Each structure stands twice: as C-alpha cells, then as structure tokens.
View 1 (cartoon, rainbow, N blue to C red):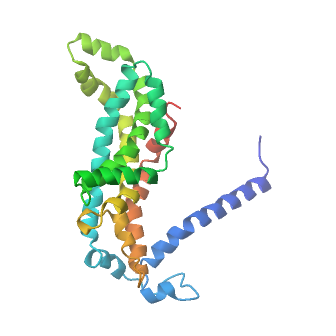
View 2 (tube, one colour):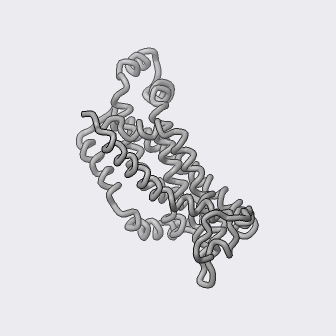
View 3 (cartoon, rainbow, N blue to C red):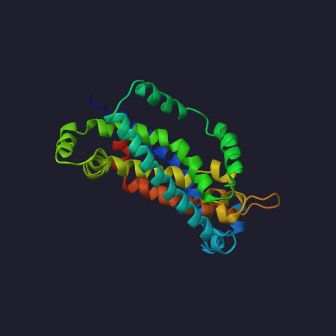
Length: 273
C-alpha cells in the first residue's frame, strides 16, 4: 500500500521528534561535559557553551581515579566475556548435541532465571562471597555478572549449534578427532559469527553493570566505572561537570560497539527464534 505525501510527512515528523526526544539527554550530557560548573547550573540553561573546557575530563583521572576504575572495568568485562563463552559455549553445545531426558525442562528453567529480578540474587551471592572472603575483589563482581549472563549466552548459542550440520562433525570423528577436538577444531570455527555476537552482548553486560559492583566493592581498587560515577554524588556536593564527563566516558565504548556491529547484534537477536 502506497502512502500519500502527507502521511509520509507526518511519519517523518513523528520519527524526528521521537529521535530528538530520545537523544536530548545524550546531547545535554555531552555539552555539559565541556562546560564549567557555573554554566551547568545557570538558569536559564546555557545550550551552547562559549568557553569549552576539558577540565571535567581531566578531573576524572586526577580527582576520581578513573585510571584505576577503567582497569577494573576492563578486567571485569573481559572476565565476564571469557567465562561466559567457555562455560556457556560448552553448555550450549552439550544441550544441542547431547540432549538428555529432561534437558528441555532444564533449558526452560535457565530461561526462567532471566526473569528473576537481579537484586534478589545480591543477598545470597553477597553472603557466599563474604564466607569465601572475596568481597572487595574483582572476581566476586565477575561471578555475580556471569551468573546472570550465562542463561542468556546458552540460549543464544544453542540455536546456532542446532543449525550446524552434524554430518561434518561425524566425519571429523571418523577421522579420529575426540568429541572435544570436534568442538574445538570444527564447531567453534563454524560458529564464529555466533560467538562474536555473544561476546559483544557479554561485553556490554559486563561494562555497564552497577548492581554487583556497588554491592560487592567498597574500595577504589575493586570498583568499576559505574560505581565510580556514584562517588561523584556526595551528601555535600554533586560534581556535575565530572559526572557528565564520566557518563560520556562510560557510554562511549558501548555506543561505538553498537554502532559498528549493529548488524551482528541484530542478527544474533533473531537467529533461531
């Protein structure tokens, strides 16, 4: 059905208005990150700063320890990606190639865990990490995020493994490869696009997590960037300039990843479903 010019014009206007509404907070955060503290809190608001400054970005590293926090976030994110791929990949392959009685129910149970409010897992995991003496350590944050991420990884990878022809793997076994050798040398290369997609999702999940970082760490040496942003809001003052700059600093990697690899992200979301 062909739309009239007026209908198309209305649709475009609505889409543009929606985009402006959605991206206005990002615009305000970006412009405010280059403003002085006075310009940020001035009323009426200053829409375009006349004297842009990088002081807010410099303060992130000189005053708010963003160098250490960035290292922590990178280690947490890489840990989540690595463990999720290894454990989730093996589990998804097992469910795909070696189904057992009740495996479908087990998969359904994994899916249900994604519906559980993450905050409900904090107390038992906090108690466990406290008993193990791992509070204020990065591995406790990695474990918490991975627990929530694994069901997603398994459910994302299993359809990819299901779609791979079993005949190739059977031929490799006849050539003398062990089941793990087939998985490592045959299945993994064939499933590389799926693994790449899951890695992107896992990276974003680990990078933006706040719940476990806030719950399991109280010292700078074990805090991710998300928790570092909270430290800018004290009972006496809110460091608006640094907060805006930190928001851009935290958001930029995920924005770039989503922009560059949106094709793979969309493909991963609809494959097998």
